[in-house]
Image 1 (cartoon, rainbow, N blue to C red):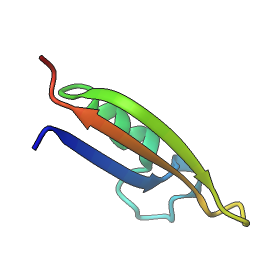
Image 2 (image 1 turned 180 degrees about the vertical axis):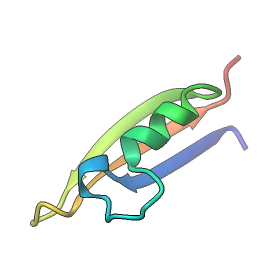
Image 3 (image 1 turned 90 degrees about the horizontal axis):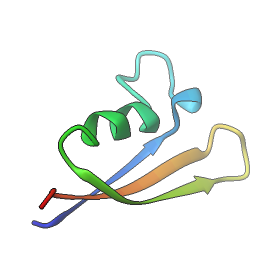
Length: 59
């Protein structure tokens, strides 16, 4: 598999007890993968704020 996708609520909207929000997960993945694209998805309410990111293996 050449690409990985992450879809996660942003840090500010994660419920208490949730391991990590999108920004935290993206930062961890960027230590070993290359971020290709990032899209923000905002729903109608404030707690529907998510990020979707695409990663690939480094060359």
